[in-house]
Amino acid sequence: MNIKDAYGIARERYAENGVDTEQVLRELDDVPISIQCWQGDDVLGFESPEASLTGGIQTTGNYPGRARNVRELRSDLEVAFSLIPGAKRLNLHAIYLEADTPVERDRIEPRHFQGWIDWAREHGLGLDFNPTCFSHPKSAQNLTLSHPDEEIRKFWIDHCLACRRISEYMGEQLKTPAIMNIWVPDGYKDTPAERLEPRKRLIASLDAILGAMEGKHHKVAVEGKLFGIGAESCTVGSNEFYMAYAATRKTLLCLDAGHFHPTESVADKISTSLCFLNEILLHVSRPVRWDSDHVVLFDDATIAIAQEIVRCDGLKRVNVGLDFFDASINRIAAWVIGTRNFRKALLFAMLEPRKALMEAEGQFDYTARLALMEEAKSLPWTAVWEYYCASKNVATGSEWLNSVRKYEADVLSIRH
Image (cartoon, rainbow, N blue to C red; front, side):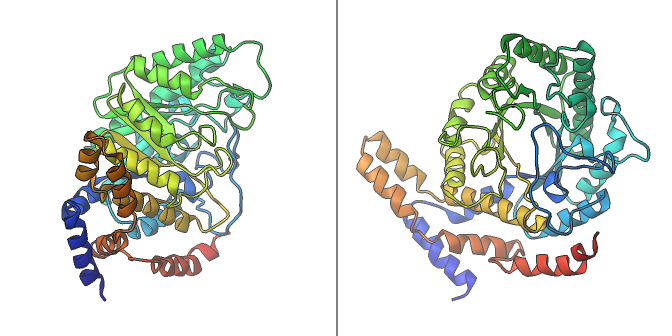
């Protein structure tokens, strides 16, 4: 049976359950996924040839073919994007600037990212952006916006303000708002003598960043974390801290799937956050033990996140981005696997017989609710996925791996 015929049968099956697959596919295709640039070069960026990671961030593995410059990274991204169906954005960090001479981070300007903006426009992409508050001499003590030294705090405030100006320019140029996400590594390896004052300093720094300008073409998110390498005993910007901060300052909260206790449900936090915030940012990752940022799988945790977005009608309020970096496998394949998996999860969630589920719940018929949820797992959603990929001229199954292997042989294998 060919893909079109299989889809025809699947469409009829879903119609019997009150689901219009054609409408689902139109809505699915419009949901943008912001793909992280740092998977392609192991989070080193192009600020300096001697760049190294600090601030609780590590990349494991040394698979051949890491992108060494902007040209190579864009080329790799183009290959990955060609194998991923649906709307896409690119998420940049400040260290991915283009400059002929070194530029200090508090002095970066929109012109240093004009090449990325032009490239994004050419490929029909939106851009998102992040200050880089790690891997720098002024972050050596694992303290930035909460640092007790006022001069160092000012440096990082000025860096974040520079990033806001860049984000604003990106959003204006590309006619789609940029999401600028602030994450800082601030914390203490061992038990601190106090926690209150560092958090007060972080509040003051964030207030200075958010209050300095109006964002017409960009939105600011703040991202918490459970702990990090070198910040095992205290993370200044904890998840509770940022939930309260985002709610009181009416800015976006970033929920990173790897930044919570292993047994916590990130999915459950989505509807909670949307009770108090207009929008949130979601970083989808896979924490095997903690924030280890493995490639996203089509697993229970990923499906639960997608289901919660759909079930609380959050497709327009949840900005989806990816955040993993795996150097143990082909980096382009990592992009493709992770992004396709999350779009699969969205499709799976959107194909639920939502109307029937809501009616059963409204009538306190929890038997029918559970039965319908379980039976939905057996419906032919894979036929819908394959049809969707084929309609976008994208490989329906693992055939995409052939393209990656060819690119690896022709391009990646000769990089040194």
